[in-house]
Amino acid sequence: MVYERGKIQILSKKESGSGYEKRKRLTQKSIVDTAAELFARDGFGSTSLDDIAVMLGVTKGALYYHVKNKEEILRLIYLTVLTASEEPLHHIVEAELSPLEKLQRAVEHQATVAADRSPAMIVFYREHPHLTGPFAKEITLRKKAYERYFEQIIEEGQLAGAFQLNVDPKIVTFGILGMCNWMSQWFRPDGQFTHQLVSTMFANMIANGLCL
Image (tube, rainbow, N blue to C red; front, side, top):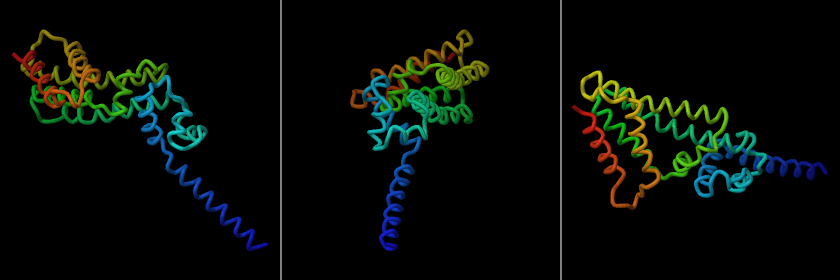
């Protein structure tokens, strides 16, 4: 009986260990990555937490250890994209470059971001109406901080006498981001032009329109 009881205990430990490993593998990042794939493929509104759980091979209840609801997952996708996009742009702004070089690199960076067809980027450009309340406000503030980098470059160029003074940095920023971000709707990696070539075209067009 002792042997049998010991055997049962050993099996129980193995089962417990297996469950532990599954919980260990289920991370917030894995949830966000999987959800991004489903949101990009089926849309945020048509994807449920059950769908995400099935794709991950876990129960719906297991998701709640890491996220509160589906909208929080969407928020995390947006924050992931913004954080990844902000870092290179911050380095460009802080670099020892002329305002023109900074502007060209910033435009090229933004065009590259917009041309990215990863699930997270597809969600970023398509699902923003589903962010509400505090989440929507948080993402809006982060986007404004991102836009501010472009405004800083333009203001720096104006102060240096490199860019025209009769243009408003905020309006120019809206134009740059609108032009670049629209690539998310029409750009195709297998098309006639690479995203590098398109970004160079954009950068030259903007620079020639601003420079004296």
